[in-house]
Length: 152
Image (cartoon, rainbow, N blue to C red; front, side, top):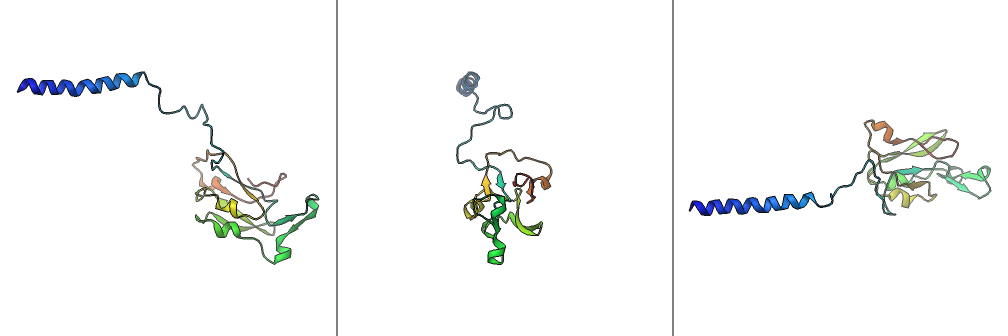
């Protein structure tokens, strides 16, 4: 009887030992992420880019002087992105007397519904995916005008 239990112990240890040895010579399943960046697929969903110059304006194609604000035509601004956001990550705020969207990336689920819904294509997608931070305020994209017309 003692011989059978001893034979069982050897048979249990032997496959484990064989497996451990085989893993020494196989390629690792993980990648060296910080030093080697992964190649993203073309439809990867990264950080949103908001171009304030395109929001709520009609461009006649004759330069920045020939842009018309939608509020002058309709009496109100477009709120489609705020309305269609399922995570409630977009709020409309006042910037220089105009109402523009403020995107909170901390709440955003990157569903891209705002990109599809925007009639002026003011919200776009990037391939920037490294959004880790300790400061939640840095994840709020406030609509501010700068020289290029894109928000921060």
